[in-house]
Structure formats: structure tokens, C-alpha cells
Image (cartoon, helix red, strand yellow):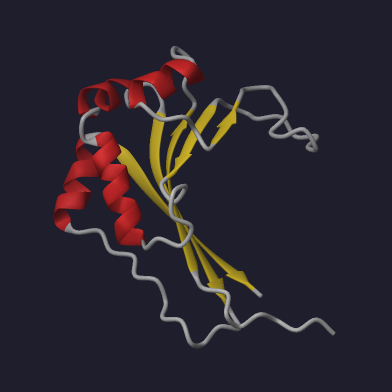
Length: 145
């Protein structure tokens, strides 16, 4: 029987996702935002080399946790806001023809009772900021062992 590592911490991964764009390329998005995506999907192409499933739409995803492996939701949120705050006009324009999403994945280690649960909090100014650029918020919980 495998021993479960109870010291694995809970993790949060906050991502900026842009879905369903047609009139701009992945490279143009990267250039406009000033960062390279963590993951890209190309419509009608395989999602990854080992997959048999093709992407139904174009997707551009940037993870805010790239530089610091176990950063908090708040730290990642600040990185996202710092990145996007100078791109409001661009984001407002493209939001008319694609989906902008702030995606939050929370990984909870069911065997770690010592680590406090991650705090996920959006203040009114955060809601206003993301609302102004028509960015949706998605949260997924994953229980890992």
C-alpha cells in the first residue's frame, strides 16, 4: 500500500483565459498582453500530442503561478491585475468577440489536515475591475490524495 504524503500543501492556480477568438492570432494576443501563454489551444487541432481530442475553439491561457510554485490566491490575483491593468482598452475591445475568463483551480489534499485551506476572496474593487472588462470568474475544486 502506498503511503500518502500528508505534507503536500493545498494549491491555488489562477489563470487568465481567452476563449473563442477568431480575428486575432495567438501570437498577437501574446504580444498585446506582453506575456507568453502557459497553454494554447488551436481550433480543430489536437489538444496535446497524446490526445485524440481536437480543440473546439481557440484558447490562450496564462497561469499567474508560474514564477512562484505555491503562491496564494491573493498574490496571484495581484499579478493578474498588474498584468491586465495597462491593457484595459485592448481587453474591452476583444471581450466583444470572445470570452475572457479568470479561472481559479483549487487543489485540496484530503490527507493534509495541518495546512489551512486557501482563502479565495474578491473584494468589491476586484469585482469592479474584472466586470469593467467583461471577464467572467470560474472556480473549480479538486480533491487530491
